[in-house]
Figure 1: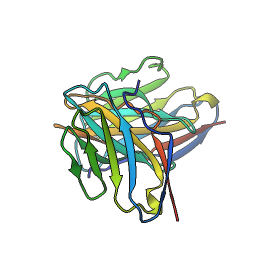
Figure 2: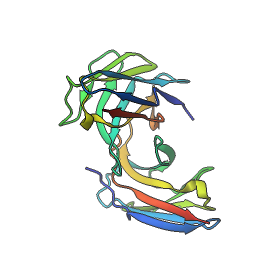
Figure 3: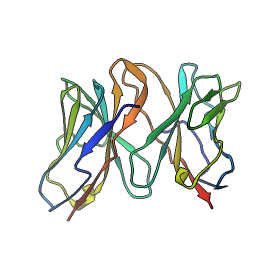
Figure 4: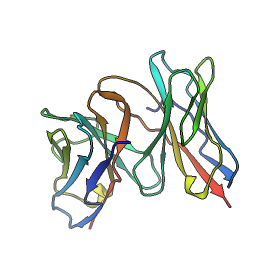
Amino acid sequence: DAKTTQPPSMDCAEGRAANLPCNHSTISGNEYVYWYRQIHSQGPQYIIHGLKNNETNEMASLIITEDRKSSTLILPHATLRDTAVYYCIVRSQGGSEKLVFGKGTKLTVNP
Amino acid sequence: GAVVSQHPSWVICKSGTSVKIECRSLDFQATTMFWYRQFPKQSLMLMATSNEGSKATYEQGVEKDKFLINHASLTLSTLTVTSAHPEDSSFYICSAFASGRWETQYFGPGTRLLVL
């Protein structure tokens, strides 16, 4: 079973920041927070991951609370092409640790 | 990032036939690959973990004799749906870790299977 909880859907205006929350209250000390997204009828795309520090890359920023029980993915300037289902996943690294997908958040970016 | 390809991208077959789906890592070696299935409006469900040179590990409820997985090289894993039936119609997606780099899993574009 997925170890994360996400809102089923969110809307965002084009050009504005999209903030997607994720709760992972049972996360273990060696588990990372990963974010993937899936655009309709495509394979999931890796976005970002982090352990406890905030992370930023060319796609997004990841803010993890100090107690690590929740996180927020931030798309700073959402575009129509960011409309997708966003999955927050916790997993430990090493070996063949699998990704367990929950239901994710359907983000709709509106013009 | 690393690139994973799948072939074919879509396939239509008659009930009772077998269908083979290929998953390739194009610019890296993958000792471990994963196969997922996704039904409409649902999330991805892991079917099995494929390890190069050894037998696949199947998730509970997945029939290993129906979904044959072969991972014969470091860049290729195949999923064969044997004696396909309409209920096997789904979106099949593979993913892979780059060998020695366990941080990130890269996904293929998926294969849509329709069994008539």
